[in-house]
Image 1 (cartoon, helix red, strand yellow):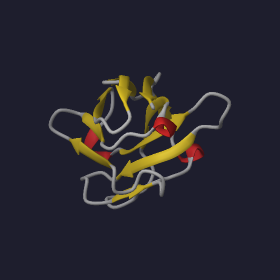
Image 2 (image 1 turned 60 degrees about the vertical axis):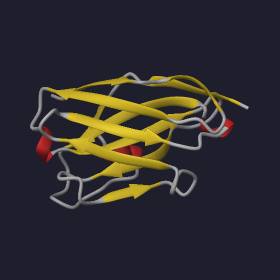
Image 3 (image 1 turned 45 degrees about the horizontal axis):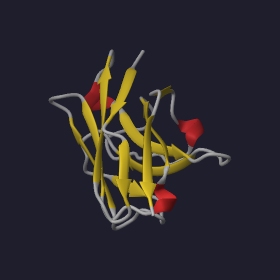
Length: 127
């Protein structure tokens, strides 16, 4: 069982930056593929970014590519999401997710591929 706790959300203005973190416990973090998803009011949860075991493999949604950067620190069991040039449409609850599926370079961009989820952290971008 893996427990995930997000932090770092808040209210910012368009164009600002924000860094989200996800602390993991209860699992072998270096063998867990991780991802970030978000859900805006009235919309389905959507993929944001994913990262493989070592951090060598990453994937991004088209809407955030070039603005967001996913990273992980296996020594600290922490997943991060650096969000730059934020837009109003980035407003959502951001959740981290984890799975033991795959192997060293695997990344996953579908919700059903993840087994463990955090509670989420609210990001609000004012226009």
